[in-house]
Image (cartoon, rainbow, N blue to C red; front, top):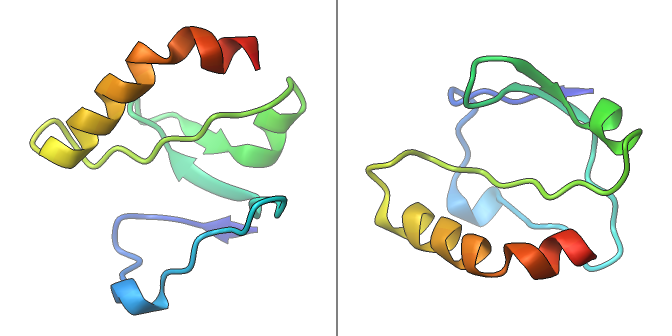
Length: 78
């Protein structure tokens, strides 16, 4: 199990995303409400859409959230 916190820094070159079809590793993290989030527990309820949001100060994050909101119905249908 991997614990992720904002203090776990890596260089961008070291960060590799998942390939299509790969499963995300389980991890523990704090959500926006400071509640513990455990990915393996959430999978028990069905598929998971996981979004990493740096903060309201981040224009890229806000644009991404806006695009997700615009497509929320399609996401929920999946």
